[in-house]
Length: 88
Image 1 (cartoon, helix red, strand yellow):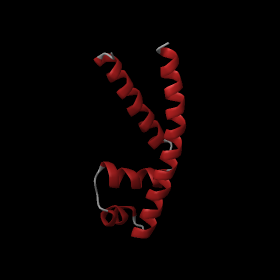
Image 2 (cartoon, rainbow, N blue to C red):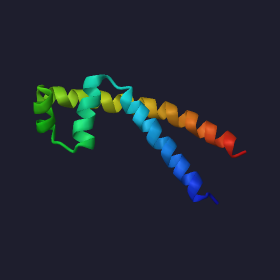
Image 3 (cartoon, rainbow, N blue to C red):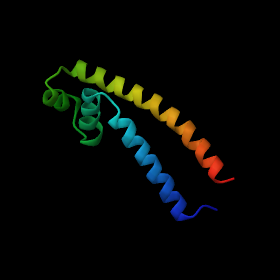
C-alpha cells in the first residue's frame, strides 16, 4: 500500500513535469494556453489581449495542446519506467 508521502511525491513530480512541458512551449502558445486554461478567459478575451483573431488564438491553442500531449506522453513513459525501477 502506498503512503501519503509517496503519493505526494508522485503528485509533485507530475506537476513539475507539466510545468516544464508548458514552459517549453513557444511564447505565444504558452500565453494562449495560460490565458484560456489557467486564467479561465474566453477565447474572445484572450484573443483581444494577444491582439490576434479568435481563429489565430484557436490555432495557437491547438498547437500548444498537441505539443503538450506529445511531450507529456514521452515524459509519462520515462516517469513510469523510473518509478518501476525505484519500486523493485
